[in-house]
Length: 469
Ligand SMILES: *Cc1c(COP(=O)(O)O)cnc(C)c1O
Image (cartoon, rainbow, N blue to C red; front, side):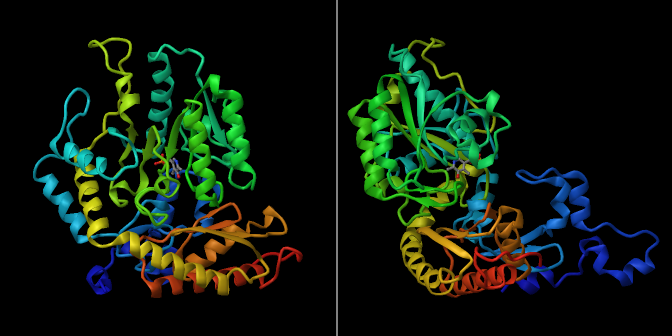
């Protein structure tokens, strides 16, 4: 492995935590701050209570390769969450590194507003051959939330351009998560991440999510009841990720798609999390037989290398925007870094590698092994309420006697101490390994998870009140 390659060199003195470096601290006049201290003093981390940040033993990554991350102290961690769901093929993939370097020899970025870039055209052509969208057009952005924001503005203006001023609302599901900008947040379930921005959000029609076994019937009924005022239905096909990895039957999702067709409502599929092989097919929509009018992609699109997202738009929707120059049917929206050439070059090579390396069959095979491992050694634990999985997207829901015990948080902290990076959604521990994960690594992942659960819950269940570790 590359361990000696990375750490054969002398470590910078400030790369060690001062508290653990008593020897050199004695010799120095002042204590050199650790990387965590320097970080906590100046960087504001997303979705993180900064007053508690340093206490959570965060890791400060300096390098990585394959499925491993290496922190500033030289500790190795299995990347059990694919760097927050974005990584697919691992870190420092030589072929992706090469694509990036080659593109640097041409240009890093040029604007997509009113102009184009060769590698972006090549990427769009390549994507067009694989996305489940009819005669697709590609509007690039930089983050998943932007892809969603663009989709909902396009869906809204589509009806305006078509001369229908009634259809201006969105139907979304309970537990939905579509990103953190105000539009995406409006679609999302407030219960997932708090209500503070409620006054800024626009109202939506909400039907129960995948956690409700009758969700599909209810959603179809809502489409029927509201179709005259609906611009679009927005869903995360197959898996509601941030809600806690709630999974739906493909046939139920298909039924909702058919209902949208029947009532002429646009269907927006948010595959920011499920896209690029995560659930065993390139896109989850395929398993549900869906041909969405708009498709949102992000996260895995560059294999986790660079920020890029895209809103994929079917031909009939695209056509509704065609008109005279500067006319009101134009879509007046665009981001400075949308269609970044470096990201496009990596995304293009990434698509080729998914095919060349047979990534989808690896996902299917590894998902089967992971399911067996979880069934054998995680599900029987009294502290585990449920295990939900589609492909290499897994949620292990802990049945904590009280959320105050922060089981999810503490189990993940224990896993990190044991060399596996995990991050929970409440009391649901997420397992999202890179798609190139190997069998032995899955064994390690599940073993560490089991030990971490035992560390925190003492092998006990939700009936008993287990405190403190
Ligand atoms: C992560 C996520 C988003 C938001 O993507 P960002 O790149 O974090 O803005 C949107 N939708 C889904 C389903 C996601 O999982």
